[in-house]
Amino acid sequence: MPASIQIPTLAGQSVRLEPMTMDHVEGLLAAANEDRSTYLFTKIPQSNDDMAVYVADLLSQWELGEAIPFVQFALEDERVVGATRFMTIRRDFSNESPYAVEIGGTWLSGSAQRTAINTEAKLLLLEYAFSTFKVARVDLKTDARNDRSRAAILRLGATYEGVLRSFQPSMAAGEEGLFRDTAMYSIISEEWPGVLESLHWQMSRH
Image (spheres, rainbow, N blue to C red):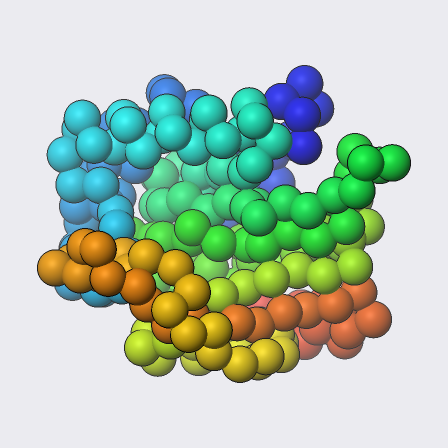
């Protein structure tokens, strides 16, 4: 997606997704250091310098059309609670709009986990992918050992497609240079109406 195409802010009842900028570094750092005990299978920056590099790298990927990064805000107190993004953007040469995307790179502060925020954020991103981009498919994937993440993806209504062995470098601490098995899930356009109905039902229970 060319950087000249501006991505709108996506807002629900509990969360707002804003396009990431360097101005978000301080808020993201505070969110990342609330409670790091759940970041077992992913790399979340811990220092100010590392968070600045993280944000700058994602903005570079956006400029190249490789990712669309968002910052997650809890509407209850207007506090930064994490990040998420569109990534692995696939398009053909005849159309700037992608035919498939991945929703990934998602992390939340400790206080925002196990709340409605993750479900609603995914709902907002899925709605944008299927309604605005009109994609045929959305990917979701995680470290095959991450049972918590795998259960959350299934709750969204995604279909499990299998484990891709040694698919990508591990992001777990102490596993630098090693490769991880990745559990792959997807939602396709034909399934989206049913998934949308289920997500709205889940949100109504919060």
